[in-house]
Image (cartoon, rainbow, N blue to C red; front, top):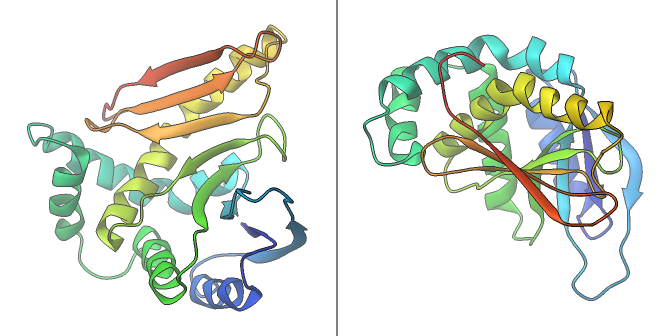
Length: 205
């Protein structure tokens, strides 16, 4: 995994995040820093890794979380279910370690930077990203689990569009909806019209 950042994010914040993550996974700080010149420029920290890395490092725990999340499907939203699911698992695990590291970074440094889980497909610049909602470390655990769970289906959407020469203009944008499903949005490369697809939450990816 690479930690990437925009130029407004202090290096000390990235260093602290790196130190928190390093005991649990293979991670490095990307030396390339992205700069924007506009007054309302985006600000972000990306945790970027290939699909195989996400799956090898997190899929086992993600499957456990998803199984419990589906069991609690009668609850109103994934957040309501998420607190219950997180409470089921005691002790440390890789999802929890990442979630707590992100939460510490967000609470220690008051910046406007968004935290994004990033897959460098269809390319490393306009890839596929999920903007995290860091309300609590329990929420983050579930968001991480859902991201990893949906990766095979996300890859199918990417490959399907690539097969017909219809890769998006600016990558794919992911959003977890209330029932735990995943909304995938992108802009058509030629018409720039917004396209979307919803992946329902099921126990199997």
